[in-house]
Length: 379
Image (cartoon, rainbow, N blue to C red):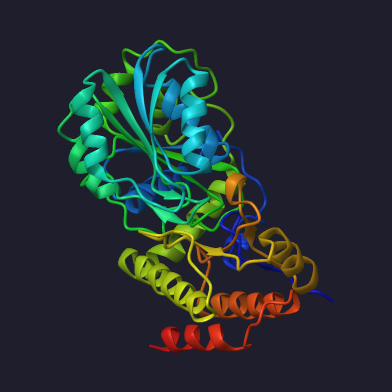
């Protein structure tokens, strides 16, 4: 028997209470039974997003929310500034280009975070830029970008929307949508929200809704105006993902019981213990500045293939983490501490990493990283 552990940055583990809630008999998405379910879900999302704005609920992956953040608010030929610091920064560029936007990129070296003054310089240089697109957490590198600092800059440009992919950062990081001036923020169900894949969430500011009125891009499924109209009636535009939304309400109860501040503290505590345990093993952290509280990207020592670490952990020990992507493939291994995660997820992940490194010939003293993690997690 091989017990399975999921320590990847998405999908993440789902609590038993959430799974049980989704095992209830299905209800019809247009029936009166469903109205209070969606009403509860939308209010819970506003609490989590820290916003008074509408938070749309889409039956899609997070990337669907990213697509909708482009084709609902802009016109072909308009200029967009994309912060490209990894695999998912590149995705913003590809989506924008697919819909005819003229993209200017600020390319940030993988493992580093964007400096707000770089964005300010770009906006001053070209006042025609209509949006700034960025990840909160760049999952491929384990870096958290300075969303608050970027918001302070972009607030000074009334014709520019601030668009944030918070799919991996939501729940793990304290992101204050309204206070920081985020116009469009995208989340996904399979990360910090402790649900299976299948839901995207998008908060939209009044500033962005005004831009929606002049957008002429084609849209059908991802039609945010129609979603907003239906949300006011506690419905979705098309068939609701009823089971996932029932699970969302249960997951929200768990988070609300813990309290928002405590949720953020827990993620910061787990992330810090992971990073310090990795350092105690003599390994480097790939994110050279502003490491994320969602996932830790661990540099592999010379002669050790990160993909082999991933494969060995999964096949021999039943632990699914994540390897590196694109230029980081083989160079790093990633461990998440996101959503339904606690002390012993970290202990398990670090202990297994030690065992695999030793098996692959790296001189590791077993227990070194675990001891460091224990010390910090007990404090």
